[in-house]
Image (cartoon, rainbow over the protein chains, first blue to last red):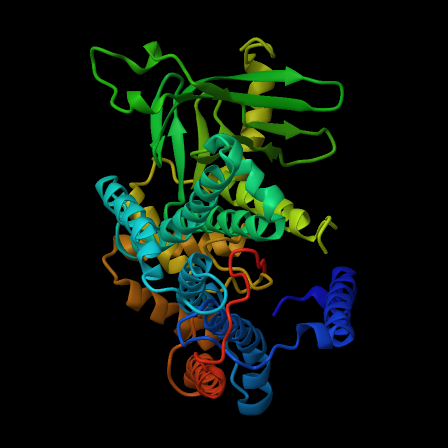
Length: 357
Length: 148
């Protein structure tokens, strides 16, 4: 269990969750006449029934988290057994549930409300082909196993949203004769809540791609290097270019210059020495020593690109100028931030009061 | 390096010996082959750091976790299997050290409970669908304009 209770975070968090719960239940009770349906569903396979299944999956996800977090307490209180429930348990149960959620989300997006027209399942074909193409491309790039399957499902969900935008824009082109590229943003004006919802779905797919890639392909290693030497971490080739000491009024700071070499130069041949390669960027992880303190404080350097985050931590510097550097690569982490931002923006767009209430 | 003076020997020595001393304990001198590091991380992420708040041995920056990772590395180099290494830590710290509780005894309830919830929810949903799906009565209310 998290020991939130020992700090102020606990009460604040509890208050926040309580407020969210009270507000949503309150609104639901106040508007219960408006949200009550007629109790008739058009078909077993329909957007409505997929929403129901979606709720089943969300319920089981919440139950899994609840069971996992309270179980150690219960086991100790009832059976006197001390055990821990950690990430391996949650990953094994929540990842398949999250994938089911994505598939339901993708298929429900492609179906209209109400009765399902004949042949509507053909809309699954294009996202299916895109997903298959992604899987083949990723397999060619060396992605294997469950990560490959996960990314394939994510690609399917993302392609389903994009295909709905495409279908809507084409219909608008035909109906009003607008150019396709202008019709795309115009969709948000035609039915803001619907298309903002699809944007939020797209954000979720982006964020989950980032989560899947960064948890499967995180690379971390320590390297002891002399000046001019290169080392590899993940898909990065790095070169140590020397260290420098600065004397600042309040502290000493020693910084190592580490160059990120362009990915196409991954192979260093004798005819093409590493020193001759022009760096794509140079990072300066450093250690700071304040006079009052005995141990230096490392200040990591981070390079964030669409490919992922590279963290460098300077662990030690030897008198001969060689250094020990910890390098960590977290692929696609910026996708998580971008996806989260897109979800937040889309959420704001859809709740913003508009002309039609 | 444009932004700072080049390393000067005496000052550097004083600073760096301190830096070296603090880090040397945790740092392997030569770069480890990545395959071994991955194995160490895989095992360490299954173990709970005994002195932390719900953190795995792989993620914890604490000294004890560092020692445990070093021990895992040594045992791997000695040729022990991941299961033997995990069993060793269980014998020293108890079942509590496992972040992934074994599927036996009380742990069995933990693993089956979410599955039971899933089946119960599916049964309720299926019963609801059987009661409410009436294709002939449903009317299409402008499917393309309805948001959600």
